[in-house]
Image 1 (cartoon, rainbow, N blue to C red):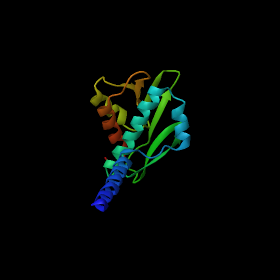
Image 2: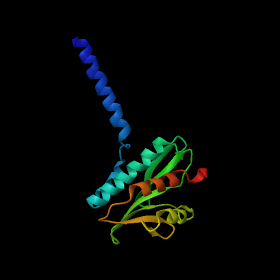
Image 3: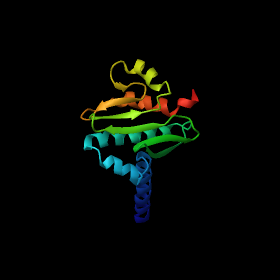
Image 4: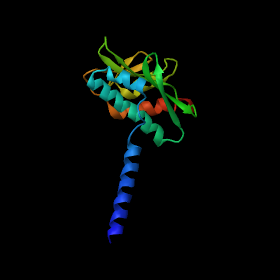
Amino acid sequence: MCENYEIKIVLARQILHCHFMTEISPKMPSEIATIFSQMPAAVARNLSEIRKSIFDIAKSSAEIGKIEECLKWGEPSYLTHHPKSGTSIRLAWKEKLGIYGIYVPCQTRLIEDFKLIADGQIQFDKTRGLLFHETSDYPRDLVASFLKQALTYHLK
């Protein structure tokens, strides 16, 4: 009886460990963590959630594949590594403007197409990005939809 109980505890721990491991995005590289640590807490929290969404979306879709995380122009950047299914995504904090945002290359049609979907719910930086005021939240469903489009941009 005691052995069965111990086996159940071990199995429960393994299940919990696996569950939590699948829910957590990859460890943030130190250079990225340094950038996030320089942001106001609310901005860092929101951009960290967006970062997690990028990895969650990639994990949920085999066509997206592996995400490469690095710094581009001093900002956290996310690229589909293999296959190259999407375009690059940058997460930025613009201290002087008091905004944070999600940026993509301006040569894509992502922002122009997304303006039709967002219907006034999001502020845009021309054809480059989605912007949010530093003290405001962001529309999670719309942002997740945008991230999915960016991560699959080259599949269209």
